[in-house]
Every structure is written in C-alpha cells, then in structure tokens.
Length: 89
Image 1 (cartoon, rainbow, N blue to C red):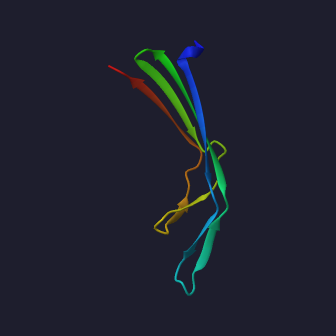
Image 2 (cartoon, rainbow, N blue to C red):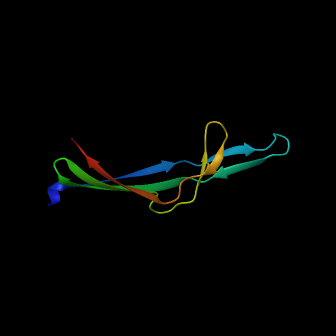
C-alpha cells in the first residue's frame, strides 16, 4: 500500500525588498521582510493508470507582498490547495 504513495514538499524563500510607490518627489518606500513559504504534495496511485494528488501551498498562511520587476506591488496568495485526479489512457 505504501508503494503507491508519493509525498513531496518544498520551501520557497524570498529575501526582503523595497520599492518606491507614487511620485519620486512625494512617494513612499514600501518594503517587505523576507518570507519562507511551505508547500506539500501527496499522490496516491489507485491503479497503474489512475492517481489522486493533493497539493497544499503556503501552509503556514504567511502574509506577504510580491514586488515584481515592473514595480507592481500586490499581496501573495494565502494558504491554498488543489486536488487532481489523473487518468492515463
């Protein structure tokens, strides 16, 4: 039974960063501290052609900003997950 189970995980770490919001004369500097995100996966092979997979992301439900290369600032995704059923023909 355990041969059909696959478990995996990952840790994403983002360093602290800062960006300017608003005009250069009257804007503000927005920054975020570093953040560590925990992700886990479990897959069970029901038959050789059918498997069920569970994914969980940001399992510690960290609140953080994403500062992208275009100076866009937005909240990162909160705790979330997905379930998938895969069938091979």
